[in-house]
Amino acid sequence: MKSAVVQLPGLNRDRDMIAALTKISGQAPVTIWQTETEIPDDIDLIVIPGGFSYGDYLRCGAIAARMPVMQAIKQKAEQGVKVMGVCNGFQILVEAGMLPGALMRNTSLKFVCKDVKLEVVNAETDFTRAYGKGQIIRCPVAHHDGNYFVDADTLASMEDKGQVVFRYAEGTNPNGSLSDIAGVINARGNVLGMMPHPENLIEAAHGGSDGRGLFASALDVIAA
Amino acid sequence: MIKARVTVTLKNGVLDPQGKAIEGALGSLGFEGVGHVRQGKVFDLSLEGTDKVKAEADLKSMCEKLLANTVIENYTIAID
Image (cartoon, rainbow over all chains, first blue to last red; front, side):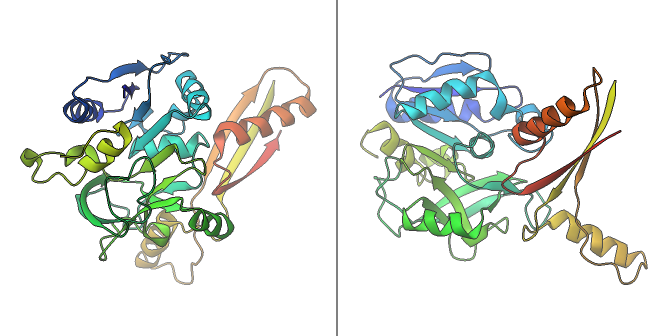
């Protein structure tokens, strides 16, 4: 499995993501710059990391979502390539219309940076197979706009199709997100977005490895 | 030259934490009876040419594609 990490002005979690992917797959990901219009054919997983692309101007992820590279990523997703967006990456995917809903300002109006608990709601996706259904994992969050919103009809349809993948558990919802939603997947099951940062909890030096299963699942390697 | 103003507001039913905070701050400044504060955005633009019909169509397209997130926001267009 070959992976790629997208780099855009203002994204700053790319190095953490590259380190996580390298450690877990044993192979460094290729990097994709914002102006690129073609993505190599041998890439199986494209990751959009966190940060503050284009200074979060207009709306978080709004400008990045309209860059040429996103058209290329959209095409790849339509061909079935896996795409994962974390934090600002999630915001970019919803702004690009690749995932339903929107991410709004935290209800506390404060930037939150702490560990939360996540419930794995759907453990049958290509990104969560290493976990069990209902398993509670620990994961760090660091964001100002993670308050997920979607209209009631779309939410009902998403719940039916198993598109809600992660929920904040045990009262740890840090942002007022609707229905405690922390991560969602598209109907086809190959585009995942989540606010928490699994790349920051993959080894003992991080104080835990609960996030490792996501990459192990997506990269099809055994979770250690 | 055509001058236009685009106003983007949150849809009804979408919670607005910033509007709520502003409402609270107005209350603490002593402005009584202020309710339902909603924060939005205003964009002033100038467009080359004089064709207002085309300008309106272009502005609508700009709103749909970038200026508003139609999942959570409505927009109105005013042309001078």
